[in-house]
Image (cartoon, rainbow, N blue to C red; front, side, top):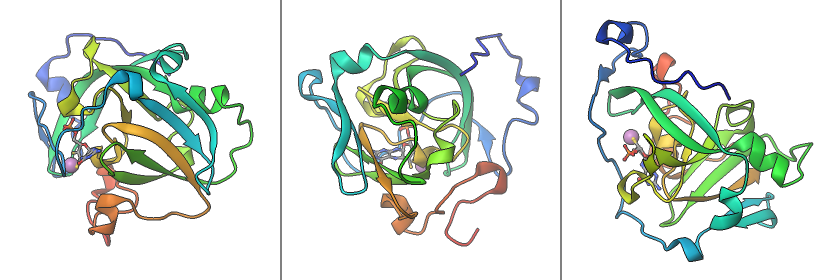
Length: 202
Ligand SMILES: Nc1nc2c(c(=O)[nH]1)N[C@H]1C(S)=C(S)[C@@H](COP(=O)(O)O)O[C@H]1N2
Ligand SMILES: [Mo]
C-alpha cells in the first residue's frame, strides 16, 4: 500500500475529495451501536476463518504485531455525512493477513468481519485485497483508542465507515454476500460513498 504522507494540505485541497452529501469534519466523532469494548491485549486474538467458522489461522497480539506493518494516509466517509481527510493509520493489510495464513487461492468471494461485542459487517473480498483494507491498530501515530475501535479495527476507507468494524476479531469467508449488523437494519450491502449507497435501495 502506498503512503501519501502528511503534506500539510490546505483546505482548498478538500475540493473533489468530499463525496456527494458529505461535509468536511476536522474532529473525529465517535459512533458506536453499543458500549465501547475493552478487551485486554493478553486475551486478544485475530482469526481468519472458513465459511464454517474453522480457523485457517489465528494470531495473538504479539504475533499480529510481528506481521508486516503498513502505514496509510486516507480519507474516511461516515454515512452520517461527515468526511475526514488525510487520516493516518498503521496496521496489517488484508493481503498480508491472507499471505501469513498461507492462502494463495481465497476459498470464497465474500467475508464477514466479526467483532468483540457482536458487531458484524459484510464485504466482498475484492474490496479488502490489493491494499484496499487493513486491520489498523494505530491512529495518527498513537495506539488506537478504545472509542475508535482499539486495540484494532478494520479500515476499508473507500466504503462508508460502518464497514470499518471496530474491535474487530476476525474475518470469516462466506460463499455469498450476507448482511452484517447495519446492513440487516436497512443500510446498503456495499456502501460506496461516491454513489451515495447509504440505504438498501440507494
Ligand atoms: N464494532 C463496531 N464497529 C463499528 C460500529 C459499531 O457500532 N460497532 N459503528 C460503525 C459506524 S456506523 C461508524 S460511522 C464507524 C465509526 O467509527 P468512529 O467511532 O471511530 O468514528 O465505526 C463503525 N464500526
Ligand atoms: Mo456510521
